[in-house]
Image 1 (spheres, rainbow, N blue to C red):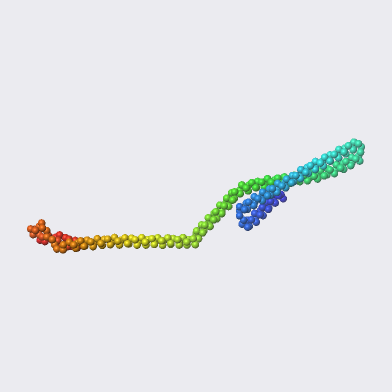
Image 2: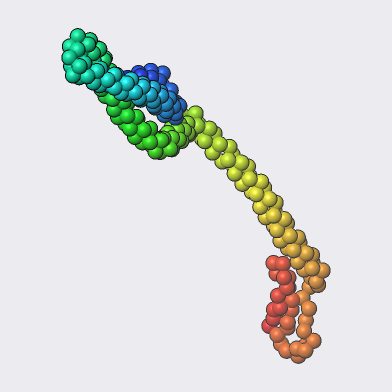
Amino acid sequence: MGIFTRFRDIVSSNINAMLDKAEDPEKLIRLMIREMEDTLVEIKTACAGVMAGSKKTARQLEGLQAKAVYWEEKAQLAVKMDRDDLAREALIEKRKFTRRTETLASEMSEQDLLIEQYQNDIRQLEEKLKSARDKQRLLVQRHIHAQHKIQTQKEIQRVDSTESLMKFDELENRIERMEAEADLVNYGKTASLEEEMERLSVDEEIENELRALKKPEAAVPSSENKNDSTEKWWFKGSGFWVQGFKG
């Protein structure tokens, strides 16, 4: 199992733990990115170490291969010199270096496979990290929008609550009482004005009657028609004087 696979298990475990605790989504996103960044550094460091070891193994392998070639040449020389005993000793040394070469070559092959796996994990993690960073802002904005929506719904519920409606009803009743008081004040002013106008009308009637009383009470004959058999005269009517004729 590669480091990246183990990383996914660790991240999944942490995410599940945070979700169980109802952690802040923004905090969760930041944690995921931070863990991915830390893991990427860890993988690159491990990969660099394996690559360094592989280079060292390659140098050792070259040295062993050179030793094997050296002893093979010595064996060939011994054969030419009819020194089979020395040739056998040279071949024995060659075999020792050849076996060590095979062992190092196997180790180097494993190191190359591990390096390839590390590099594959690094590519995957870098892609995941880039995608996470690209989505981070969008997810944060969605989280902020969700918080605002929740707050708005809470405000709506608060306004729609019975207590709020009772407060609105109480406020409406207070306004209605104030309006009624204003109407009463205006009504009192209107009544006073009507009374004043009625008083002026009564005063005018009194003055008219007073002027009527000051006029002559008896009928007054007309001087222009003394010879007429019909005599003009005045009499007081209801609040005014009327001219009449006496035949």
